[in-house]
Length: 219
Image (cartoon, rainbow, N blue to C red; front, side, top):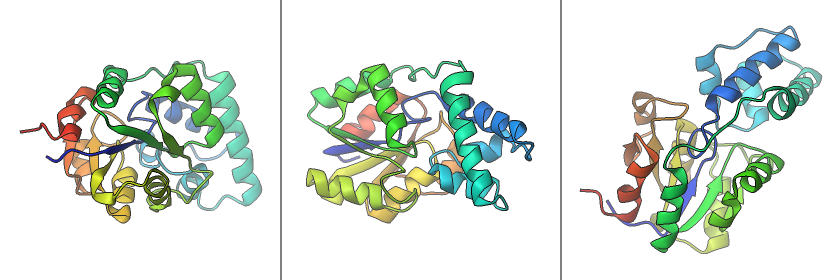
C-alpha cells in the first residue's frame, strides 16, 4: 500500500455509528406520512446519498410537496424525537489523532447537509481534526465526484495522493469517478461483499485497521 497525503472520510457509518438511527427515523417518517415503509436494507443502500437523491430511490412516485414533507418530518425525527445516541465508532478518534500526528491532512465528504455536519462536528469536538469538508447541499450527490474535485482543488492535492474512506458503494464509486483510491469499511451501511462491487483498493473491518492502509505500512 502507498502513503496518502489527504484522507477524505465519509461521516455516517464511517466515523459515527448512526446507521441504525437513520434507518429508524426514515421508517418512522414514512409511517407518520402514511407511506410505504422501506426495509432496513433499502435504507442502508441509500445512506451516503443526498436526501433528495435518497427519496428519489425510496419513494420515486412521491410528488415534490410530499418529498419536502418527508424532509421536514425526518429532520424533526432525527433531531428532536429520536433520542437514540449516535456514538463515534470505537477507535475512530484514535485513528484521526494518529493520522494527524503522522502529517496527514483530513477532510470530510458527506451526504449530510452542512447544518447537520457542523452540528455533529461541534458536538463531538471533531471539527479540530479536519482542514476542509463538503456536504450534499453544497455539491452534487455521491457518486458524482464534485465534492472530491473541490476538496482536491482547495487543498492543492494530486488525485494519486488522496484516498476516500467510506462505508458504502456510493463513497467508493465517487472516489473512482474522481480518479482517487477508495478504501471501504465493512462495519457501516454495506457489507464487505457489497463494497467489493465498487473495487476498493482495500476493505477494513475496524477503524484502526485503516491506519496501516493509509500510512503505507500494510503488508
